[in-house]
Image 1 (cartoon, helix red, strand yellow):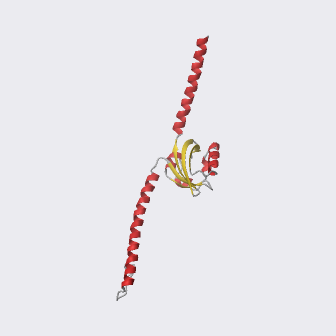
Image 2 (cartoon, rainbow, N blue to C red; image 1 turned 90 degrees about the horizontal axis):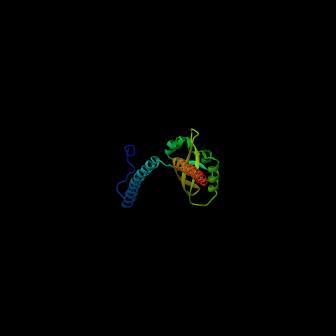
Image 3 (tube, rainbow, N blue to C red; image 1 turned 180 degrees about the horizontal axis):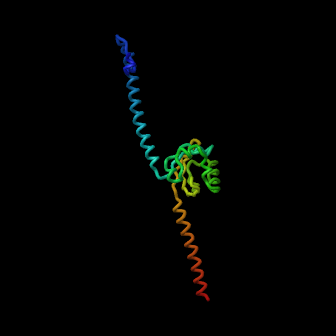
Length: 178
């Protein structure tokens, strides 16, 4: 009857001091562990909110299979996939040929920290450039990827403007020499 009402233990009368002390000690330890579990769950919830509200893609990749084990919600706005669609799929299938070579080479190294840039294809078949920062530990890549597509486009535009400028200067010099 006591257990049905929510009791977790019982004591026999007359009380044996050693048994009573042992049971109270165990109950106190269980109570402290439960409080610690609640505290750690709150910390995990905060970390989950932090990770899932990041604008950067944050993921865990299994180095052996190259599959995404975990990925945050930024994948949706960045690549058009939801986290469930991309989880357990191979990262190589989203990369262009150069990116696949880079990732395959890095998967064979023993470096514990590295960065690289690679072009990925989105769900709508468009391409995005991502700058990856990776920590490798226990056969897993803990990765953060930032979209640098606009920066790459701006860099290309600057290179083109510089080439155009050099060509214009060369034409002006040629005209001046005539």
